[in-house]
Image (cartoon, rainbow, N blue to C red; front, side):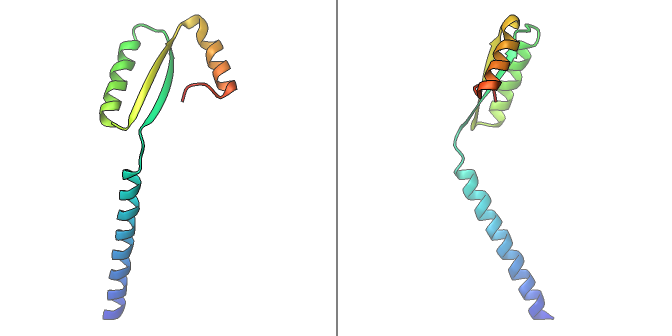
Length: 90
């Protein structure tokens, strides 16, 4: 009985150490990420978007969000063209 308990504890310790190593090394290996967000020009919402992006970037220092405001008349065309060509927003 004591041997089974010891083996279980050793296995659990091994799993925890392995998870710690994997999680720790992947967090260290992260490079900065840039996200592009396209929005149509709706003035009441633009300051809210900018504030939300600033808060998000403060909470996620490895993420840079680029907000691109597109005039309403151009938005559908640019979005469709961007998505079709693979050059659209993230």
